[in-house]
Image (tube, rainbow, N blue to C red; front, side, top):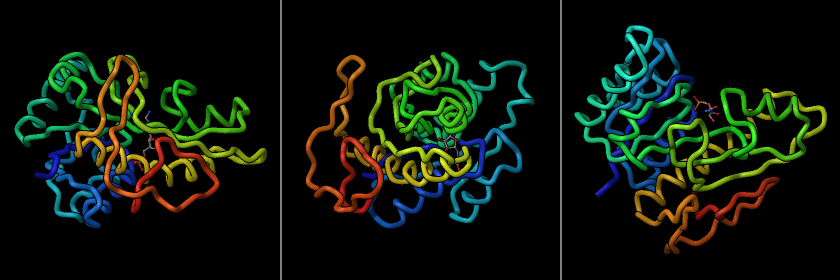
Length: 224
Ligand code: GAR
């Protein structure tokens, strides 16, 4: 049985699209039961519509406070039958009512090697700091921003003259690989938690042969 996932997004939807593509390619054993977007007009809405995936726009500015907005989202996600909530460029903190309803069933992708550069501008902050290596992280979500146990990380070298936009693009192309891979591991129930640490049980798929100008750990499997 495919894993029922819901995607929460605020932006252009390139990660949502990458997840849809891996499902369509038969590599990711998941079904997107709904896409929830908090920004009317965001690109992710068109991505979902094109793929024929139910998409609901819930505008957070129309709610009295964070908790009442999050409760409304929980109702929509439960109604849709979501087993895992996938944050794909969702730019709001989740409150306790949400995280209690989906305890350790919410994952996020962040454009930095956490715990470095949490927040809204991971790539820009890395360039401003002058780091020589940056990357991206898929992690479980806790109430504190960008802080939950790490599932997979990828690192890229930062070129000295590089602007944040170029770094962000190179990071995103890796997000599009590591995020579907992490969700597939969750669908296969191969990720377990040991305190803050996650463990990946061995699987049948061979390692990806593709070795580029980056480091991904644990290694990607074929097709991701
Ligand atoms: C992604 O790069 C993701 O890492 C980032 O938003 C972008 C959304 O792009 N998320 C965060 O910064 C969360 N703190 P997308 O809409 O094209 O997937």
